[in-house]
View 1 (cartoon, rainbow, N blue to C red):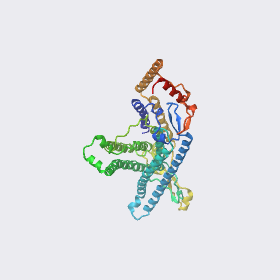
View 2: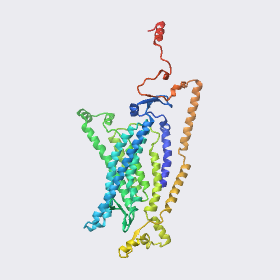
View 3: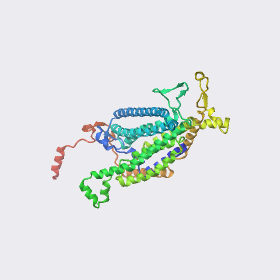
View 4: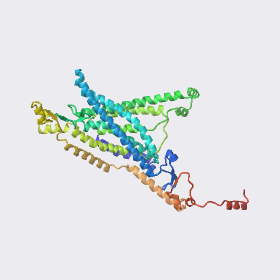
Length: 501
């Protein structure tokens, strides 16, 4: 899966370059105009050194301070997520103790499983609730930061939401994979959290619980999103039709033109939620795939279903979206690259530290091929002080052995293969590269011909591309104007002598 992720991203670069050239968006970000909101709210203006046009301007130092404030808000929200995670950990521990002390033998036997499953469901509900709150907050913060172009605005908004969602969705699986059962202690000296003994993994290890947590969060999120995408547009469409005036209802009963019927549909809110859902899914099927190999299968089934749901939603419930140009998918691609690198490291550590693959392999080749006595091999003897306090009985508890070596070779192999693929596969297809070179050559030839014929007008004044900043509404000084103002008296005299009115 790690190699697939690396290869997928390398070939996406080629597809992206071909699409951007096909739609003439290869240099779109260099000539992108300011956002309408930025144009209306910017306090200053400045002449653009590239285009020579006077554009709205917002000081960079003020924007930097606002971005720092937004970062502090993100940190506070991440702390809130971690506090909820600690609360869920305590909930699982206390619930398992209560169920274990109950009189029902069936519940007592399954205390750990019931607490773990209910904790996963509760964690999913908390994740979805915090996601809605933070997305609204991220919109407000990004709008307050006053970014000039729509691309920059969307990139900063996406980055804020992803940082929070990364911690929100993956904190619980990361805890189960790498921290749960590591700080338990030993008989006679158990570690506690707020007076409650720390969680320990079950007899089968934490890998089974990690797979269960992944399936509950990923599949549960997919089911809830699909239900929302099917039901919410229909409810909103029904409510919109209900609020329509009687005159529009009468028009609706009669035959209306297609564009009038389309105008009564819901306004499309963009594709941000669709992108975010795919990126979060990409993280689940790559970062933790060693614990749950069925995750890609569930992702494939979900995408089949969601393709049809989205088709029905965008064709029948929403108006046709307004076309917007873009050079690429923006900051989503660096995010996917970050997830890919995290997946290589995470799977290597999962195999080495969370699973029992390495100890079993070592025992099979050094002790017994049938794994007879493997359980006793993984247990260590308790301290003497504990044995003397308990009538010299020997107690054993689980410990980790020989789990550092397998981490580094696999990740270096994957990184090496990824680097080789990056070197061997060019980012721009050869056919597209030849077209781009041909277009640049033809543009230079056309420019040379126009210059030779004297048809190209190049501003000769220095002030045409000056970057002087001035406040909105302020009059330019006489030194800033390209030519002196005309003398109205002289114009009137010339008009009188010419005899025209």
